[in-house]
Length: 375
Image 1 (cartoon, helix red, strand yellow):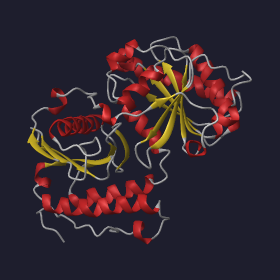
Image 2 (tube, helix red, strand yellow):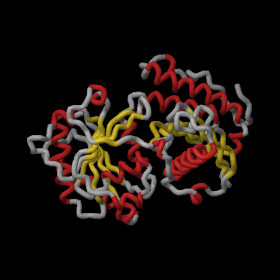
Image 3 (cartoon, one colour):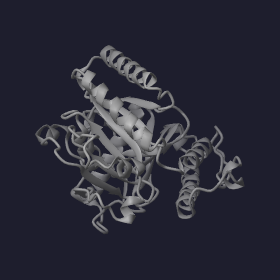
Image 4 (cartoon, one colour):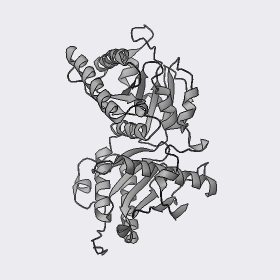
């Protein structure tokens, strides 16, 4: 399906979180601790933290398109729940949501089994609460997990910051960072690295943080970033994201810094395209997003948003100037080369640092000069 129209103020006219039809949802099930070998092969992301810190709300908003206001009615988690995220071959993992009262010293808690199969551990701290107890639990959790599996990526979400001023956010992050690392140093765990994120389910910060976490679990990430850099440099594009359209997690972007406002615009565009496609598009296998899906949105500040389907679950979303978009044929040709390279990456796996991906133009891209000519 193709969508093309002009939009004067997208960020102000569309809900920041958006909504997805149920056909885009994931299944949730209670985990069987004697997991099948197929499930056991998937990397796990563990969601841990004290009760009412917001773990289940994060999971519901990011992966089930629940409205943030609806999360106010979620019951407190009292058992471990597993969410099997398997929409694509690379965003292919399990999220385990742990109750806040989990006891690591309980004989029934199998640390070896749980932490050995874990790719990332996300510890959620409620920034609007007294987080002294949470810091103590964070230290106990990560130190226990590190001793079992030192390869885990340890992530700390300083959550519910929507109720804090900008200065208070910065001060809270600095304080949590300092105390957590001091505790690790006192325990002789200086090699254990913690990453910190300020998050809220009421804006795009939670999607941005989860994107960073998931990217660490994608072995093809360096290759994807290289391909995106080549694509934008040959097409006159300012910024490009490779999105999982279901979760709005971007699995890769080019090497230029990510501007939060640009990321929000791209997320909103995905919401618009999916919602309109599901209303007016042809449904195939319960999904209106297909190889014909594309959209162009022209904002009133000479910015153009450009979306194209890459795979069944992936979309390339680009930001560029109107004058650059005048070379639309060049962009379309380069996108075709880019799409072919992406399919090759995931069909054959990540190639080593060979000639195909280390040369300046491995995909046969054409180059658009300032005057619009291509060579």
